[in-house]
Image 1: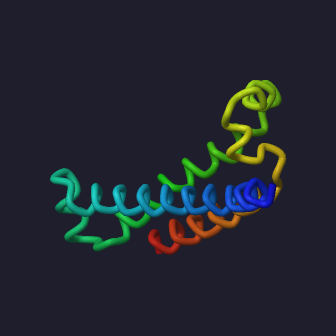
Image 2: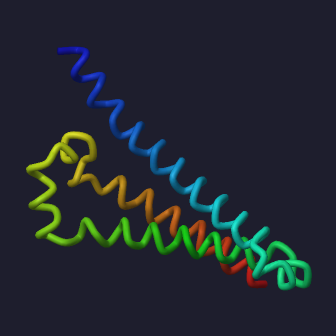
Amino acid sequence: MAELVRQRRSRPKNCFLLYVASQVYLFVSTFLYYKSGPNYKTIVSLVGNGIPAAKAAAACLNWDSANNLLPASRTLISKLHVTVLSTIISLKSITSHRNVIYVIVLFTWIHVMAHI
C-alpha cells in the first residue's frame, strides 16, 4: 500500500519533468532550425539571434496554448477518463494549468524581448 501511495505522488513530478523536457526540446530545436537554416542565414547575420529566439518562443507558446485549451473540452475529458492516460495525468488538477500559464507568460516575455 505504501508503495502505491509513493508511486501516485511521483506521477505529477514525472509529468512535470516530461513537460519541461518537451519545452526545452521544442525551444532548442526550433532555435537551431532558424539559426542554422539555409533560408535564414542572411536575416540571422543582419539581426542576430532575435529572429530564432522569437520563433522558438512562439513555437512554445503555440504548444502551451494548445495544451492548455484542449483539456477544456468536456467531450475530450470524458473520453480521456476511460483511458489509461487518466491514471498517469490528473485531469482535474488546476496545478498543471497554472504551471502552463506561468510558462506561457515566460515565453511571451522571451518572444517580446527577442523583437525589441
